[in-house]
Amino acid sequence: MTKKKTKHTNPLYVVKGKDVEAAFGWFDLVIKKLNLGPIIQILQTLMAEMLKSVQTYSMFEAVKKMIDEVMEKLMGLVQKFGLA
Image (cartoon, rainbow, N blue to C red):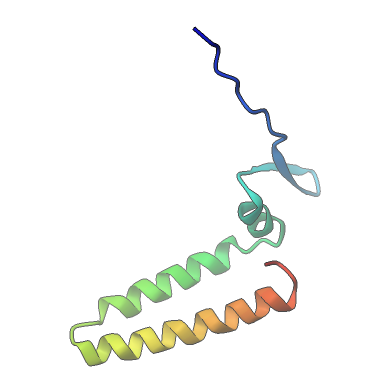
């Protein structure tokens, strides 16, 4: 029987003043470092509310168009600041 080797990785941490938080991956690190958590929560709530109003296919297309525009602008910001 062979022993299973475990891969040891260095944990990521975000330091903000006196506070130190563990980050679970690079994406989480960027979100915590730039304090984007509240903005992401607002976007999730906004999209959920827009999707609740969908009852017809034409409404779905309108909501999808708005979400696509928001995501396009966010991706433009991500590329502009070199986060991706």
